[in-house]
Length: 289
Image 1 (cartoon, rainbow, N blue to C red):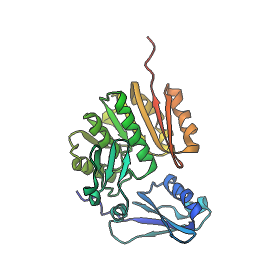
Image 2: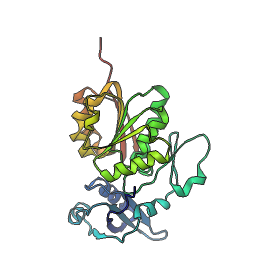
Image 3: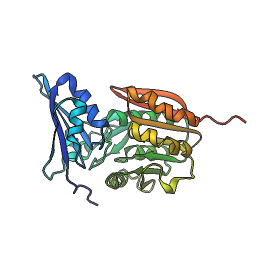
Image 4: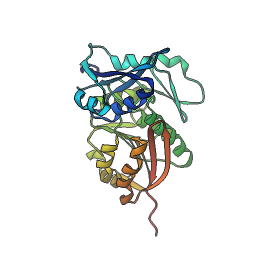
């Protein structure tokens, strides 16, 4: 199935190098969620170009007001820009995982769990800090517990769902609101020989087919807004002693997000940070008696 026929929009701005990270983070957290964010620095200059690629047209006026800079938004030529951008990125090592694209196939070392991820028009190749944080947490969780039922909520490319399937050899539900992302996740699951284990669903939140089930593990690498809105659904879907990974949030949003989950009896076990981004590990304690 070809999922690369949709038009691609680009938001771009030239900024001082020391502002590039902040502008990139702004692109990341402002809806609609970009499919990729790139920073191209001038090697011997003081400026950098920050670009975000989208499957739908972003609000340039809103981005300009938030950044306090003129953001240019335009439709880019009909090319596979997401895949081309990924070809310039190196493989990623996160926990036991080695995440790579087709162009890096010969670089897979021994002693790792290889994940071949092709981005298409979906978010999540392992290069983003939030995705790498989640993969590292999954590695550590696997050292101390078995998981029988798992959910990857907001699956994007399916990288976390595929990682779960590879770690525990169990079926994983992978859900996303974006039909294109779900198609990409399904293709990536087949590429990694986990097609029979990864059950993809199009859903805004916990899929209807999965409601009523309780999961041992849920990973939700989305954004602070959806994480707060979906907190009751996610909490209901997490079983006793279940663990929950929340990511796609900035450091200053940690307590905001936690405030929506603690009333549901979930306890923070660990925070992990990389740059501006955070991943939170929560657990539902076993009920007394």
